[in-house]
Length: 290
Length: 207
Image (tube, rainbow over all chains, first blue to last red; front, side, top):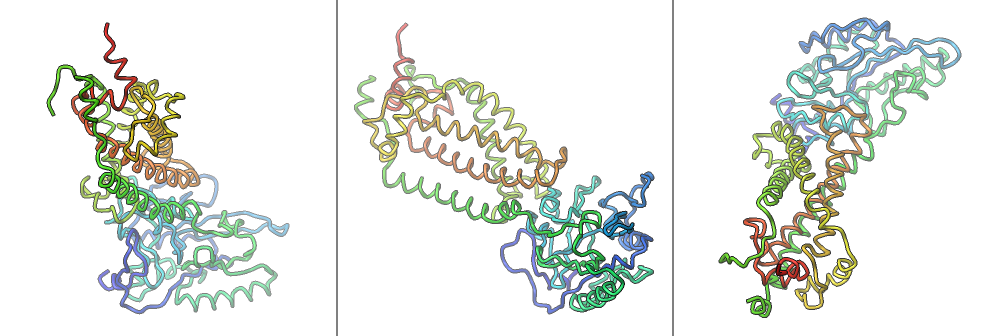
C-alpha cells in the first residue's frame, strides 16, 4: 500500500490534492458476456483470493447463487432468460463494482480517505477509515457496496488492487476458463472489445457493443454486450448510469451554500451588535416599574 | 444581576429543563451532523470518539431531541399562534432591528419574530425527523431513491435550522436581560414592560 499511496487520483472527503507523484496508466477489466458460460469460477476465485466465505444459503430455483452481492460476495453471476429477438437467450452477467471514473460512492463518502481512486482507475475502500454510514450505497449508480453486519464496514470488489499493485491480474481474470474476462490497459481493452464487437456483428448481433458508460466518466470494468442497445436485458444493467442529481445537489451546492449561510449569519450578528449596540431596557421603563 | 422578589416568572423549572435537553441535543446533533456534512467539520468527530462513534451516536441523539421537542411543542404551540398584532410587528421589524422599538406594537409572551422562528423551527424539525429515518441504515432499509432525497432534505433543513438557531441565540444575546429567563426562570419587570408589554400587563394584573 505504501507505493499505491503515491498514486491517488481522488480521495473521499478531502479538499486538497492527494499524493499523485507516480505516473501510471489506466487499467480495465473487460467482461465479454458472449463468452461467459456461467461457471462461477470467478466467484470462487474472488472468495479464495480475498479469504471470503458467504453464508451457505438455500436454492431459490434459479442459477443465481448467492442471490445478491453481500459483504462476503463481491461478485455474483446474474442469469437472465430473455427473448430480445423472438428466440431465447441466456444472458449471464458477472456483477460487481464497475470502478467508475467518476465514482458516486467516493463523492458521497464523508470519511476522509475511506474511499480512494488510484491513478490506474481502481476505486478502493479503506475499511479502517470507514465509519459505516452507508453513504457509498446512496451514491452508487450500480447498487454495489454492502455493509457487513459483523463490523459495520462497507465492502465491494477491489479489482484485486493488491494483486494489481504487484503486476498480477485480478483473481477472477486469472481463473476464467473461457477467456470471457480479460484485463490490461484500458486502451488495450477498448481495442480488444472493438474486435470482439466486430466478431459479434458478423455472427448476427448487429447491436453488439461495448458498455463503458460515459455518464460516470467511463468505467474500469467494462462489458461486451450482444445487445448494447438494451443493457436492461442483462439483469437491469442501467442504460445511462450517472451519479443521481440528488446526490450531486447533496454533495455539491449544498455544502458551500450552507457554509456561506453560517458565515453570513454569524457576521451579520457581529456587525449588528457593534453597529446598533445591545437592546437594553430603557432608563424610563426602569423608572416606571419602580 | 440582582434577583428581585418582584421579578416575573417567565419559565418554570420543567420548561427550562425541557428547553435545555432540546438545546444540548441540538448542539451535539449539529456538531456531529456537520462533521458528516463537510470535510471542513470532520475534526468534530473527535468530540464523539471518532467517525464511527459519531455515525452511531447522531441518530440516537436525534431520537432524544425529537422526544424532548414534542413535549416542548405541546407546551408552547398555543403561545405561538400568530395574531394580527404579530403581523403588524413583523411589518415593522426593520425598525426593531435598527434598535428603535418605540413604534413596535405591544407584544404578548412572544413577539411576531419569535413566533415566526418557532414555526420555521417546527418545519425544520419535522423535515429532519422524517428525513432522518431513511438515513438510519442500522435500523431501517428504504429504496435508494428515498435515501437520496432524504439526504438532501436532511442536510438542507439542518443547515437552515442551524442558521435559525444562530438567530435565536443572537436575539437572546442582543436583548439584554433575556438569557436569565432560561437560566433561572425570571425576568425583571422593566424587561417585561419594554419587550412584552401585553404579557407584562397580564402577569402583573392584581388579583
